[in-house]
Length: 451
Ligand SMILES: NC(=O)c1ccc[n+]([C@@H]2O[C@H](COP(=O)([O-])OP(=O)(O)OC[C@H]3O[C@@H](n4cnc5c(N)ncnc54)[C@H](O)[C@@H]3O)[C@@H](O)[C@H]2O)c1
Image (cartoon, helix red, strand yellow):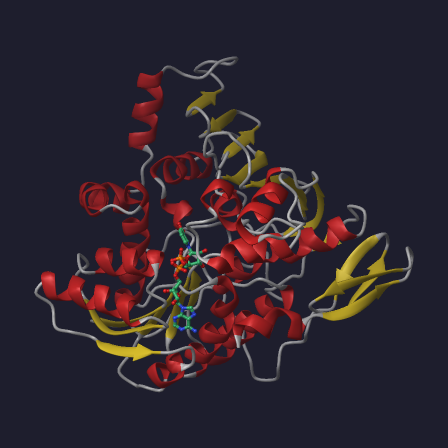
């Protein structure tokens, strides 16, 4: 099923002004020099899921679908959470199911039910004793499984990127709105300690008006391609564009209140040729090409004329970086390669001292994060941020609160993959962002954690 999904949903959209035919997952046209993708109308009776609250759940019954590297990591963390019950595992490989059952056994927890095979998630979703389906399969399976789970009445937590095309983004939005069930993309980087504190500082006005933000996924993966699962490698070889945009985008979009007072308006992308990617494609897959350029940059203008820059590079001999920069009229926060804060009135030209930065970061850490910090660092998962994300998801489900990351975040952050590809394939033409909220991007006043 997954192998043909991407090709099957692609249809051609003819761009009249430059007479190029650009594959887009939904029909496209050029208007005022900007490529615009057709947006489906909301079905009658279907309502917005902005700020959606669902019934509180005392014990969240969870089924994990896709328990490879990342899914198994989640199981290892979830055994440390209160108020959850792990009821099922689903994977293509029996050995992955066995590993997860062993985790439960070692923790003294009851065994979960096993589901084996590519379509067995359907049997799992047909059960009525599951509250949350936690999806950590390869990218092309995220949407079919999420939609099926939502349609069968379950909340969904899905790994990054939630969707690979604009058509898939709309499918998630529509399924969540129709089912009145949450669909959260598991963008864990929003819960890293520096980012959470910097966001809080921005919200308290320490940086003034934040007008330029930068994020990235710069992670040297190409030399590990022989050890990787084939799906990720093959996707990069066959797809141009920012193929993994959400780690960079999530935290900076929260700082700009995207769809909570501002929205991403249009995007322009540029990339380099494939250098190291091409070498890796030949070495590990015997392919003579790699469509993904070594370095891809997308520039996004928001409705309120702020700037977002997001970069992707999994091929360079350079240290890991998600960039994370917030620039405002009165200050600046920088996470990579060196953490630093500048604030008007403390030190105009340089970063504040490390001591001052540490005290600011501690003072502005959200209370929920302070309360769970020690446990999160012990349980782990990218230094603790994964466990904070888990904690917040379960806390909101327990209390019937809107989730920190809603289905519109999942769609907007994931959309950069296809939008950047369309821009690149049309000589870096601007591409308009679909408004997944269908006109409600200014209804919510700023990003806030529900407490
Ligand atoms: N947020 C993060 O920090 C982070 C880190 C790593 C990976 N990820 C994401 O997690 C996801 C999984 O990555 P991974 O590295 O664990 O990959 P993986 O290949 O190790 O695991 C994927 C698992 O899904 C299973 N699977 C595939 N199709 C299935 C289906 N139809 N039904 C049931 N199981 C199925 C596979 O058998 C495999 O065990 C990806 O979306 C990836 O982008 C996120």
